Length: 356
Ligand code: UD1
Ligand code: UDP
Image (cartoon, rainbow, N blue to C red):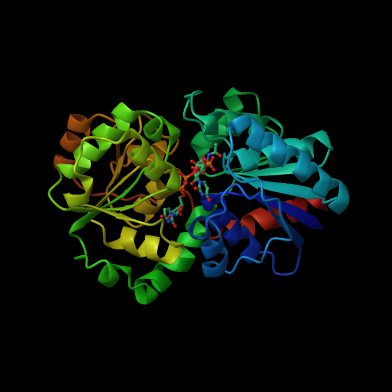
């Protein structure tokens, strides 16, 4: 059996690594990198650290508006699919690379398997929400991380070939956590005291493209009682530079650092007193690592983490963010969520079974 994996953005490398590791020569995998993320610390570092095989194809699409970026991917992926004739195209998550991969395959009547299917924010202003709805509706096999995801699909009439497998990001995290704790020296390099800093990431369009909201978030960080380590996505650094806020960020408690490799990022998560983020993946990692998380969005797809009390939705208002951080109470319970690290294996087993 031949699988063609389409990936292009940071979290997809982390997700796909878990599946690639589980192939064990039972399946031939061709990796196609769209080139959506291209900076070394948003792309290559993950291939190196997670032992992902080099992509056979790198389309070098790069950045652009949604239509032009997705459109360029679509045409170029189609050409590869015609040449490679895979049995399955495997797509991950909800980026423009996900949608382009799924659509190119579906139009050629090639089977599409969607990993991380059924997630919904119910906010169609998010580009990711459009990508995931469309991808789910043209997929032939849908791998869901949770029962809520299965129910979301059911409400949209999708019930065939829907499988709960858990979340592949758990595989990568559990595979890496011990290595990160032993090998990463990032705590020492940044001169941090474990348990005495906040870890922040912000990259969602709803925050970076809204100056008022981004300023509120930064003002909340500046008002906190400890250092805020902030590995900054290029989109966010560009936004901060463009908006030219009247904030003295250079002399503040915010420690801006380059986007981290995976090992260093996990190490920073492990020792943070709290994580402040709008990332999807990091909300779950915080949960698995039992670190309190405050989500800088108005909603989340990962509702189970909020129900558990380990994640709190804070939106983008300074006072509300600060109120939530200052009044946070660690819950007593920590139920298992989204699987315990065998998801890549289950996905491969299921694909093989479907193809028999
Ligand atoms: C994308 C995904 C988002 C995901 C995120 C993971 C879409 C619509 N969005 O958002 O769902 O959470 O990746 O990090 O697919 N840039 C660089 N170097 C790079 C890549 C990007 O400087 O290697 C800059 C460019 O100015 C670019 C901007 O970041 O315009 C945004 O990049 P893009 O890939 O369009 O979206 P992300 O915000 O990264
Ligand atoms: N991540 C990383 N370095 C960073 C920021 C994030 O390795 O500087 C990892 C993080 O640990 C998680 C994934 O990237 O595994 C999340 O990706 P991101 O936040 O870019 O996207 P999202 O999950 O929101 O789609």
